Image (cartoon, rainbow, N blue to C red; front, side, top):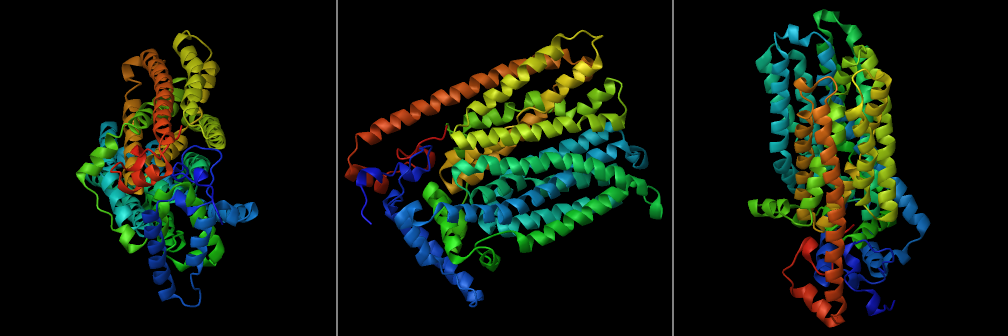
Length: 550
């Protein structure tokens, strides 16, 4: 197949936001990268076939052909079938894994409605201390755990994490005092820290850049709907109070611990990976090759994550790598949006049941009144992700979300003290149920990393930013500002305005940088481009042949 050299510049290989990409030649991937990729596939082929000669991996030659010919080598129906199988095999179980995490995180919230403080001779401040310890350990283990996941492989490390936190969750059944409570909170934070960025890195390695936001939104929908399921499960399990001499909160930790332990152990066998023969039971050899080729042609930096060869797995990380990711000027603005973008809504989300009880509703009524907000949030989140992927524009989503929040926060601020409580509940529902856009930002970080090494760290740093935002949110509504929290709402309005300005800045900054690179690249001859690609010391998202995703 002959190729027009003008259509096969390395700009296309960046996976950047270009609607009409011509992948008709493997020249879009630098020859050295291609050699490394083919060697990685060959290594994996040897590993896979050595253990199971009845299901030989035949996609090595097929992949090479597909990379040479590009998307024209397969039909839209074939790609759609591969994508559907990937959704069923990768995304569906990822949702189950997220369910396991959230059910384990939420049960401590559910037991607050029981007599656990009395049973353990604890005070509310002891609970707050436990949560602080949990968050601290969670944040401290984000990056180390992500590094371990990258080195060992997510198909091994993620189920190990899940089994460990399920075990600790189960052991909460037997806590007897403040000390044992605090110890279990610390171990839970250690076991769960790094899971979300690890899961995101794993899932996004199976999808193209314009498919990631929607898939991540499905996972986060599972996360939020688990809150509803968790409350319903707790209501049912609490009826076992007194059975076998156990308190109702003990039954909750016991049963949910066993359930999440079963999920963790099952994940060892059900988590999709090209290093396991289970993939060949779902995908044919040609489908495996199409899955790999479509992702690699979209973003060649994902080849290592897909192939998982031993030479690719043993990646070295250092303090310098972490520092470079934290200070990357093309990622820091997204980290800032991740830290402050959700504060105006999460502040209300964290206190929604308390706020509703201040309005005169019972505990049960408050729990049920929070369901519409969670449902609305999930609908808005999936919708925002869909449009971000469809139009390949992520920067408008934070602005849309902030414009959604602004009028309701203003109404909450100016309402008189004697206003009807249903008005406040209506505003609160729409504040909590805003278009949650963290899947959009997660996919943005992933796409703009343009390097699997940096992507692993950047996703973890982004999640740390979000958790820091949650800490800020937790301090927005203070006791001396209750019950209408006007001071807190005033601060939140200021944060909303800041977030709008930040999103507009990102749009301007990225557009200017892409234009600068395009001008330089456009004045280079084909030989100069090849020479640049062979000799440049610029890496990842700093390369001239990479265009920042907007």
